[in-house]
Image (cartoon, rainbow, N blue to C red; front, side, top):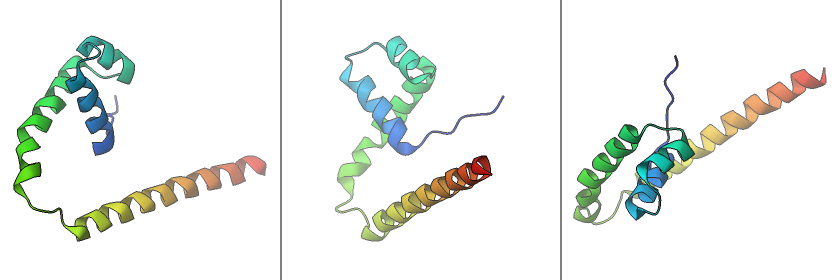
Length: 91
């Protein structure tokens, strides 16, 4: 069985939904196809690192630029794979 990998954005979204407590952990786990234990683990990790957000004055502009560059490169890669697939389907 292949392990799924989740982006930081996805994990943050799930954790924030869990913190709002509008839905039960069971409902969230079914909605996002995760185990309740996984959501609890991410929530604990999030809360343990939350104080670091306020301890640094400003996030590094370079790291934000690198993150944006990585997102663009991922998107380009995905579009290239999709484009190649569609070209093969047309032949």
